[in-house]
Amino acid sequence: MSKNKPEISPKTHKESHANIELFTKENYKWMLIGLAVLAVGFFLMAGGKGTNPQVFDPKEVYSPIRITLAPLLIIAGFVIEIYAIMKKSKTD
Image 1 (cartoon, helix red, strand yellow):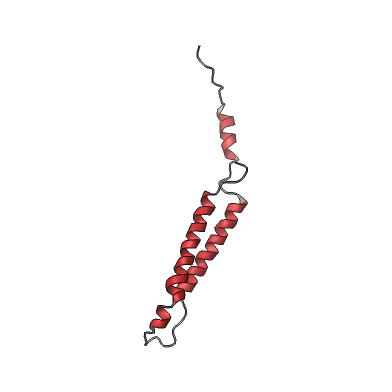
Image 2: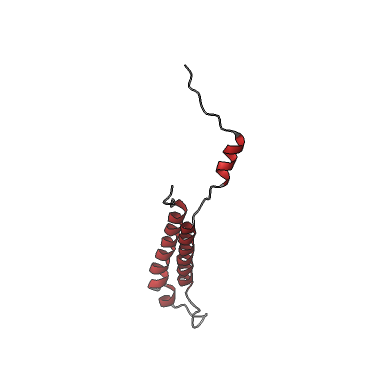
């Protein structure tokens, strides 16, 4: 009364795992978009060269672009990267 389990040969088992791709083309597209958003965020956070390095200008250092927009873009870039990694293809 034991159930017969179909035996899988080791060769067939290895071949079935050899053709699995981790990411699809769409995943890579989202990863590149996320990297671009991250790069823009870090570029905006870096700001630009000050007019005089001997003088501290709080308007340049604490500008809304550096303290608000750039961090939001960096967080958005990481969220896009997580989405790109976790996204499953439609065929699965």
